Amino acid sequence: MRTKFLLTLAAVAALFAASPAFAHHGTAGYEMDKVVTITGTVTKVDWSNPHVIFHIDGHLDSKVGGDIQHWSMEVSPPLLMSRFGWNKDSLKPGDQVVAETHPAKNGAPVGISGTASFLLKFTVNGTPLPHLP
Amino acid sequence: MNSSSTAKTILFWMFIVLLGVVLWRMVAANGRSARKDSSGAQTASRIPDLSGNWTVKAGNTSWDPANPSGSKPEELPLTPWGLERLRAAKPPFGANETFQPNDPVQKYCDPPGPFRMYSYPWQFTIVQTPKQVYLLFEYLHVWRIVQMNQPHPKDVDVTWLGDSVGHYEGDTLVIDTIGFNDKTWLDMVGHPHSQELHAIERFRRVDHDTLELEATFEDPKAYTHSFTSKRNFKLSAFPMGETMCSLSEDQEFQKSIMDRTVSSGPAK
Image (cartoon, rainbow over all chains, first blue to last red; front, side):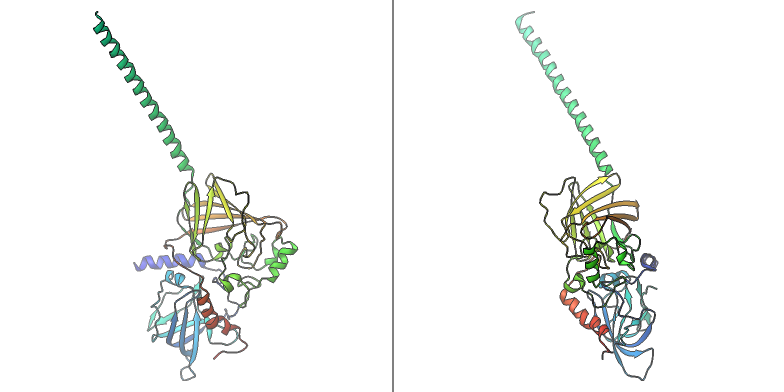
């Protein structure tokens, strides 16, 4: 079962590999050559179109002791996320998460963590979720 | 031989003749039926099997055959009208991509138009019946109907998806569409089209897992000459699903993400 899932995920990755970001909008507002890591707690999940959004209160790049930032990270729409092996309960309010994201160019605590062509790493309560390099 | 025997003999031979006629008609009818079945089976075998859920290969945001990524949108042979419309577009992708688009799909949940549909990372499927072919798209649950083996109506209305007629040429499904409104973009980078657009799609199953689409666009108002572009789609193992465009969901997304990324400073 796991092998079949991984093979399917690999096939999906092959379809979208080396392609520009692919969503209902582009990535013009994000620093796509930079990845930051947020460590914190999930406060809200918007599992809906046009893009799933995870809201996380946490520290940027493990700067524990600094101010808590209220981050919002978008990924693909629900249907595509389900094909990557996620579901509406993959992240839940209260979960401890370490999440990668491409941050907004204007410095706002907003990021893009996935489109149809990539999905950055999320670790939830110590367990990594499927990602698409 | 008396008259009674004669009558019986006549009746006997009349019966034989009648039986022979009945048997002959039965045999003849079976022969015609067999020929009809045979020709029907041959007709069915000439219809190519395009079934399956087809997934878009990402990266083709533009119908420009020389530049499918849309990094040079003015490369297509645009008329002055077409160029003006392209430059007025603020698309989400391509060389002119912006986070403050005037994309009618993003702003109003307008239907994307049939050819832009092929750029979205969602699946579509082709359902073939003898008189109609249906293209069903996951995105927005849009479906197109193609009337087979007949001409366009004389007075075609202008609609979001146009009027499509089709036929088979060997292993290829050919779809001819006219009657578009001009409210959609041809692709994700904002290439325009007018109501004069005449599009021809040729679908061919290259191998079991690959569907090729060759699309030709003729639009004398928007382009100085026609152009043709190809895309390939891969067979998907996933069932068809739902992706809708909801203004209320889009507005929430706009507030949570888009507005915060275009503000002048860090949002709190």
